Image (tube, rainbow, N blue to C red; front, side):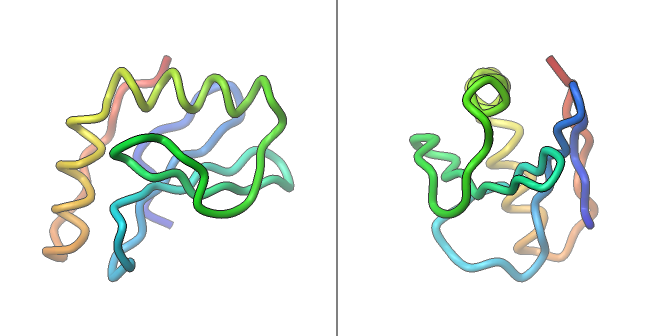
Length: 85
């Protein structure tokens, strides 16, 4: 899994050869969610409310880096780590 960040037990990843719209995945225990990068809406899955709040807060701080990593993944390039909260 192309992990780009980890904080408070939450793992953030962007997969190679993904479909549009640009999004990232977050995993927390048995919970998984896919989140659109442009507006942070949930595409699929769910997280507990506190974990989801942390993910959205983190994503808002790193939106540009998330989009850069999405473009790297689409081009088959190595992803860059992003700082945790």
